[in-house]
Structure formats: structure tokens, C-alpha cells
Image 1 (cartoon, one colour):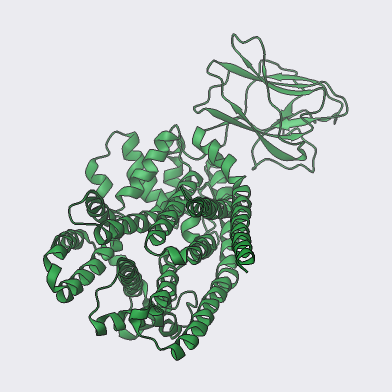
Image 2 (image 1 turned 90 degrees about the vertical axis):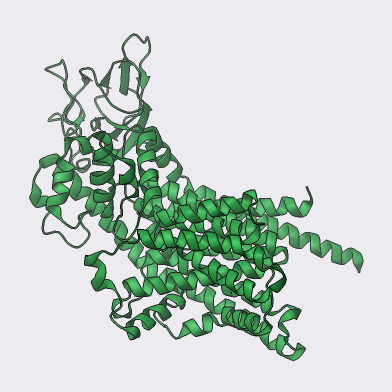
Length: 618
């Protein structure tokens, strides 16, 4: 393996760490473990409940959800539920979505690097930037949005297999399989086939000596497209969201293509000028594009078709694209940036005089789009992200309060998005369902108060220093009572039974200092399991995590200090993957900084090597 290859894979690793770390950081700070909107129907009511009742059928997995047949989103959610010991966790779904997004970016880089090695660094930095900035925050912060990630991944693999490999080869068949699978992601998952059909028709028209070689891919794309169209459904309640006329459609279409300047539709003409110039010149010369050019032509056509479908289906009033669509629209930057690269090649026919102006224009265009990305992130996305984080906090509080009290009024008449489902009565029915309540995320668990053999325990309900405050409005136990710190003694619970592998126990006070102990006493084990908080909680609450023993156990709290106290909330169990999710989310920033540092070091090393060669030669 050459030094250049080593550098490429190190750069690839750095970009992967940057993308994954950035998304983990966003999820950690603004994500929520409370299921949101469509998840209560599509996952809870129509997927998990039938699964728990042994009534889920294979056809249910392919059933329409609005306009889409989200087979892979359902499998994604169900598989994570099973692997997480029967505990539902939207944060876990978000982390897996972040992995899918990172995988898609890496595959795209590998494909483009194979086709366009001279543009390697530009491709790496562009894709790192596109996949890191949080303009697509709606997809990042919602576990249910995996359909968009599956579509992008499957369409990319389909394009790679069908466009870049020989008919009937293994890689071609892989492309066929993923082209078919793409129709079970979102409704527009077959658009990649439409662009391939157009490209193959063009090649059949101009490539007279090899027309037959294009027919297998053309026929496969037509067949899968027909199947896709037969599976399409129309949702009556969504008809009012469509563009009402041609003017509204063109306005919304222009805003989609003007990404990142989504409020200025006329800028779409500027931003897509390189791609249009490439297409028109290719048609004018009746030229057979190279594999790299074919890939970008198909990718550009796919983005344009996606933008058109968004404008048609959600273009009422010529509205700007929602955040959830921007991951797709952002690919237009790659398409047009590489179009500049192809236009600069000799076959295009630019004169030497024009090339100097062309290079300046390409730099100004790139600078314009990068500034637009920054503006979209800071002005258009960040406020919404912060607002959504606050809304998620209210959703958690209100949902927990209903579970604690059963009072429907805590869900009713709340500000917009302060309840995680638009119909409070429907949400209340789902939260009250005993089967669903058993699989809810651990953050929605409201444990009952532990019982003790003792009648004279110093641990009293809500026994904490007054400024500490309740833990999530739960009833807790603590050694700060009417005597203040002076009370001493122990609390020993009755045997505890929990359903998962990891236990969370929130604590407050001075547990961790000498004379204050919280432990698990396991039946038949000579030594107890000591529970130590990660930091001294003082007048706040800190969560402790411990592996749940396989044998029956008791929780014992001991206060042998007359000058200190500690309190604890009731234990709640966490699935293994939920615990891993919490662990990795807290360390997302480390991955991000590691990736940035690694990429910086590699680029500096490359520059240093090139400078050294130039010095030696001179």
C-alpha cells in the first residue's frame, strides 16, 4: 500500500470521526428519549403492540405510512427494540441513524475518489462540511427519520452498481437489489431509476456501437419504476399541502434548488449554472461522458427530481424546504462543484482567456455557497434546534407527569410541541397501555417507592436539603429529615426485581464521602456491590449506573455521618444498548475533536512533504 493510499484512508477515518462525532454532539445536547409524533402510531401502535401480541404480519411491515412504505424504518425500530432487551429508545435510533449517515458519506467519498483522484481533498472537505453542519437537524434529532438515510444509502449503492459496472456482474446485481430496496424507504426512493433511464436513453441514442450494452440496465430500471408507481399511495389529508398552481410549484422548486439560500428562488439559476452548462455542452457535442461525468449527471438529475417532488407534494404557498429535506438538497453543492471540474477539462472547449475568468468565477461561487451554509446554520437552523431542545424537555416533563398521576389535563391545552403527539387523548391511551408502558424508555419510568423491613429508618420521603429540589417530581428517599444532617442509620429494601441489564439510581447529597454508603447486597454473594456516583452530587442529582445482578438483591443505604446526608431516587432498569447510547453520546465531542485534529495533522504533513520536495528540487 502506497503512502498516498495510507493518507487517503487516514483522511477517510478523520472525516468519519468528524461527521459521527458532530451528530452525536447534537443528539446529546438537543435530542430526546421521548418518542415524537409519528413514532406513537407508526412504531408504538402499529408495530410494537402487534409484535408484543404476536399479531404482526409480514405484510404489516410493507404497509403504507402516509405516502411511504417504510419497511426498513420498521425493521430498524423493531430490531433495536429486541436487541435493547425490549426497551424502546429513540436516542438509540438517532445514534444508529448517525451511523447510517456517516456510512453514506464514506461510501460517496470512496466512489468519487475512485473516479476523481485529483479532486480528492476537495471532495473530502466538501462532504465533511455537508454532513457535519446541522441544517438537516430534523432528521438528526428524530429516530423515526431513518427512511431518509436508508433512501440516500440505497440509492447511492444502486447508482454505483448499475452505472459503473458491467451488465450481470456481481456489482451490477448489487445495484439492482438496492435499487429495488430503495422503493421501501420513502416514496421518492425510485427517482434514482428515472435518472438512470434518462441517461441510458441518451447513451443508446449517441453510443451507436454499444447500444445493446445499455439495454439490461434500462429494462431493470423501467420494471422497478413500474412496481414503484403501482405501490404509490395518496393521502387525502396531505392534498392541501401540495402546490396549488404552477406559480407556487416553481417558487418552491426554485427555493429547493437555491439551497442554501432557500429564501431566494432566483439564486437557483446561479447555483445550478455549472451543472446546466455541463448538461447542455454534453448534449450539444453528443459526447459520451466518462464514468465520473455519468455519475455526477445522474446524481444531479436525482437531486433535481427530489427537489421537484418536494415542491409538488409540500409546495403550498411556495414554502421553503423543511429541514428534513435539506440533507438531499445539499448534494447539489457536490454536483455543481464537480461540474466546474469537468467544464475545466479540454473536451469542454474553453479558451485560455475564458479559463482565467472561469477559475475566478468557480472560486467566487464556492465561497458564496460556503457563506450560505454558514448563514443557513446560524440564522436558519440554530434557533430552531435550541427551540426544539426546550420543547423536548417539556415533552418529557409532561409525559412523565401523566404517567405519574394519570391526569389527562397535564397533556391538554399545552403550547405547540410541548406534548409529543398532537392529540393528547390518543397519547394518553397509548401511555396508559400496560404493554407499551413496559417497553417505554427508562426516562419515562416512574418507579414505585421501595419498601423496607424497618419501621425506624432515618431515610424519609424526599429527605434532601430544601434547595436540592425533587428528582423529576418523583418521591425519593433521603437521610436529611427533621433533625437535618444529624440523623444516622440505614435503609434496607425488600428484594428488588428489574427487567433489564443495567440499573440507574439518581443520587443527591454527599454519597462518596466516608461514612455514607449505597450498596447492592446480592443473595449468596459475600461482598456487596458498592454504588459510587461519578462526582459529588451535593445539592443536585447525579445518576449512578451499575450492572444488575443475576440473583435476587436488596438496596441498602447507610448514613454514619452526623454532618452529612444523601438521598436517592428509586432504581430504574436500562437496556444494554440504551446504556451504551448514553455512554457514547457523552463522548461525541471527543470523536469530533479527534477527527478534526487528525485531518489537520494529515493535511499539514502533506503540505510539509510537498514543500520539502520543492526545496530539494530547487
